[in-house]
Length: 133
Image 1 (cartoon, one colour):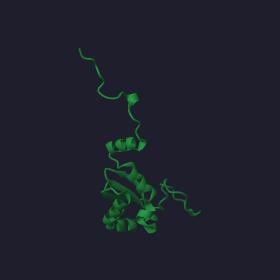
Image 2 (cartoon, one colour):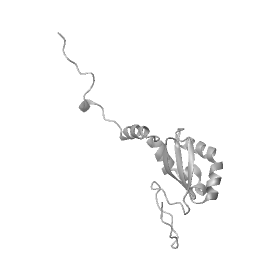
Image 3 (cartoon, helix red, strand yellow):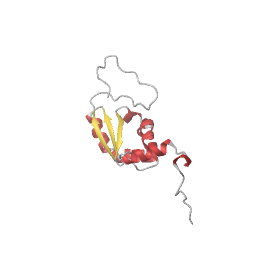
Image 4 (tube, helix red, strand yellow):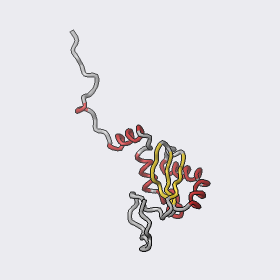
């Protein structure tokens, strides 16, 4: 006579998982990069690209390997198109992953606002009537 044995631990007996693991699995199913790549690109943007580029372009989203940047002027968009390979290399070095494989640029036509991940705010001109992104 044989006795029934469970095939594995029940839900209550499983080891707890890190939230980052669960988020990574969910974002990858939706076409996004790992949480570490996303947080690095958004939080360290100015360190990755330098203050000149960061003053005119900011990351908006990453989906299926494509980083979308908001750029404040068509001339900057043109310059950044020429720099795509260099920017991708800088991002790969900073994130230690090759999850960002392309860059798309969107000209927003007004100063690029701060990303929510950066501490502090730049002073805005009192005469600026442009709404934030």
